[in-house]
Length: 400
Ligand code: CTP
Image (cartoon, rainbow, N blue to C red; front, side, top):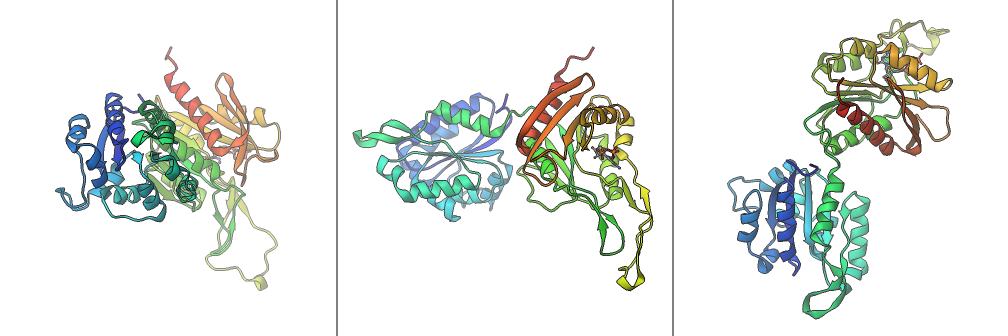
């Protein structure tokens, strides 16, 4: 299920373990993945391209130059849901660390935003060399996934650490990195950040929302196979796999970006901290100190989550966030009913380590029948995981 329809580039580099990559290829294809093998020159000294071409979903590619497309690496890199390199030699590890592109595989590894899984295999001395270990540490810190080698028989009769991980272990790692794929084919819209309401041309009224929770939700939804649109007020790195980013500032901008496209989405998560009030009239120039300003007249913004609740198409899951400091659960439950939501994520923003600006959060996810899950203080990505677990559980609930 996880691998069905996922586009995987299988990179094979020149090590004796290249023959085991044949088994990795077969298992990935059997599990429903679309596998594009890329062999380096070194790999072809150990195993024939014909073997992979016979087993994979498309013929082996070996060169930047022998294809119909003049830019095969960008096509492969951009289309891939994941790239797994098995075996990964010390050379390809070093090339990826330093950004060196000299053949189709290294170019593809640089031309992708998809997750990369490296499965090193080499002699024990090489594996334990500080240069190799340091390269892997750097790559891991950049988010590359490493499947460490096992102890066992190596080429030339030696025994030690450095043997390519078992094909089943590699496929399991690929599945784990790809995520459950339970939002595959779904369109998910997420709002993030605090809206900014103009006082004049240089000043705004806003709140402390950093957008971190919204971005974590977007990352998680993309990880689970969704086509994600992120409507955001903040400028943070776009999480891998997020299809569309719409930048907005005010509540009215956000409403304009969300409401017209709401009906075409399967899931909407309104994680943004939307301003409840805005200056009744924004000055069209900078208000000078000398002008004096003793008060700002405010007017309520439009609560467009209420509109989304009223117009919700059947089958759509609508999720709100409730940032509270008092009577957290009662207030959240009230918003769930009032705004006709399917789920609400109650956030005590006064609790230590939770809510605005933190990397961590603690929430209670509430559905129509009451509390679905209490998530104790944890990373915002883990909170995102719990939110989408609850969304998927709702979607999979038998209809009465
Ligand atoms: N929301 C919205 N439009 C607004 C205000 C809020 O779409 N003008 C959405 C938020 O994105 C959030 C949910 O409504 O998902 C709840 O927002 P919150 O500020 O907690 O609740 P309010 O209804 O504004 O109530 P209060 O400020 O009294 O707590």
